[in-house]
Length: 379
Image (cartoon, rainbow, N blue to C red; front, top):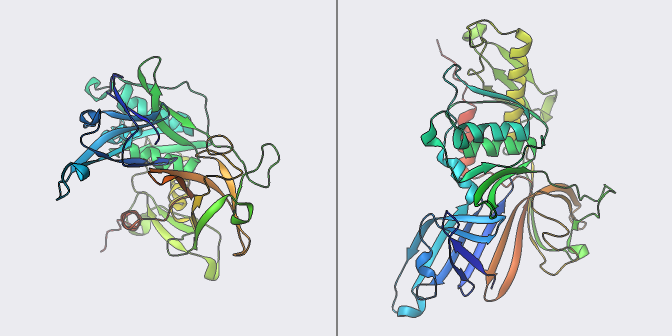
């Protein structure tokens, strides 16, 4: 079994464990991965599997314990197992909301995606105006100006959800890992590689049953959540409300949604009107950002063959864009590897992967439906 280390938040080693019953964990490019460990309570070092201690698979894969439970049945000690549940260390960003400056209604930031993401982490976790909001263990990795240009507004939003949204819109990943040498938690962003069949700079990675690299594949094509045109509503009421239109599709191929952007300001911090072109640009970017939540039409989930021509974390890794193919289905798709699940059991090891955005959950669908509510005042 794969050994794991138990350490305190302050980097004190409490023990190493490799005789657990089972363990699986996910690493997520855009969101928050999780870990579940099952282990007999009488095993060595189990007493250190407590809330807020860290489970370290390696310095890049770190999970903070948030839940544990145990049951006793008629079999006694043999089945008296702890179930430990932990989340990727970057969940600490979910402990903060984005508090805007006192001089403006929103915390506005424009720049490359890395700059924008690190701006919100710095303002709310490492150098907040209110020092009690800071986490001293956390530091920010060197700025490298990665990712496409992003213009973002935030006001009292959950920081982890904002980072996930910026990640989805820009394509760059993010994480909190361990800087063991300096005994710090390190926030940074990441850019995946293009390993698709159509490029020639790097050896391509093709996941396909025909190439003995994919054991199973689940594919779905859906328009249940699909929108490609938007009416974005800014400030104002009734016929005086500012509305812009996005999307050029026509007829049966056009799928519309209303996006409420009433919070987009039309005056600066000095209460002076902003240029109309700037307002329209901000509304356009807001609409494009929201449309990204509705553009996922194809979903691919698969179990990668553990013994295949490609080695995980060497030939390909989380965040890379690969080609997924099943010739007998007529499906070929270039997609980012957005989540990897590693499963360790007595029967062996296996990998499961999600390519592209995962299928929307019921909660996600409800949030998307609520975000469409226009806020129009009926007269």
